[in-house]
Image 1 (cartoon, protein in one colour):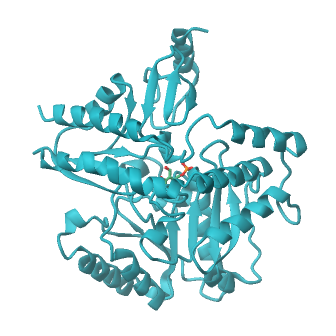
Image 2 (image 1 turned 135 degrees about the vertical axis):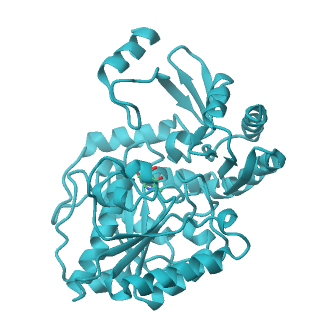
Image 3 (image 1 turned 180 degrees about the vertical axis):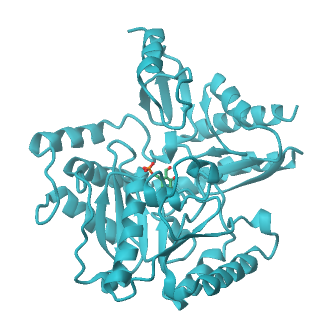
Length: 425
Ligand code: PLP
């Protein structure tokens, strides 16, 4: 099939996520990848400035991960982990994750991806309180600008209104807090956000609130880090009221912020951490929920009637272990910090442009927010110049593979700066 044939067949047969039904877009049909580079079926090369959807710290085309997957498929492709069945890669992965995790996290629930992880964490928080004799603790506190996925609970807790529209009632008992964005709240942002949290808890009643869910740094919301003292102060308030903290680290875990977990960057120890994406670098869809002692104590003795067929997948687990080895051996956490600073130094001057509101980020997850100008032309212009960046609402977001080279970082910056400057006119 030629590229044109493939594109036509795609439009005839597939519905892609986040597209208009009946009006399919012309697809860019990708063929292969290596490191931070991608090639389409016509042989055109692209520099990957986004890792697709943040999922690929170790870069594309790693033969060692393909070998591990093939070996595991030959040995045992899959068997359900419901009840008392298990497999060695899942057990080893759980041990490894707990050895890397912040203090207090003691168990792992393996999933197929991010949304499923958040469904799991929210259900488990509610079940834990139900079991511990507080069945009225069902409320989930979530934040405007947050993104937690596409399931009934994870979408209900997603604070981007357009995404929730049209689906009727989702999970009830989600209550909203302001977007944790320093720029929008001024120099006393943390004081204001913490006061709002205290006020909402008082209005709702702490005895009704099960959990607070948040991303350490908003991802889909535009790569927005909160003020540095935000998380420790939120943590203190939640602890005082017995509310569980679910940290959605689906984007931030496994190196992107320069740490294994974004929680470490902000010095916070959550009750649950939800991960996916970077766990396997996307080579196999997989996620993991890390569960704290605080939750286990509440839920002790409860039957968790929850699970999806492919939980605890041995191939995903084997690939995840090999992926974590690569992150460690190739010092990718340090690379995220060093290369993030290099890219940031090139992008910071863009903040002087009248149509740029802010350049921001942590490690190798950066965002450029526009004032009024549309961001889609920047994405299109960069792609025409062989660089993939993502327009996410009013921001351009960047999260290249952590194996991107210094020269590639400079190319990414050159092309992006050109198109951001051009967007002024
Ligand atoms: N949470 C965050 C912070 C995400 O960025 C995403 C996906 O982008 C999800 C949850 C949902 O993960 P998935 O698409 O794997 O279901």
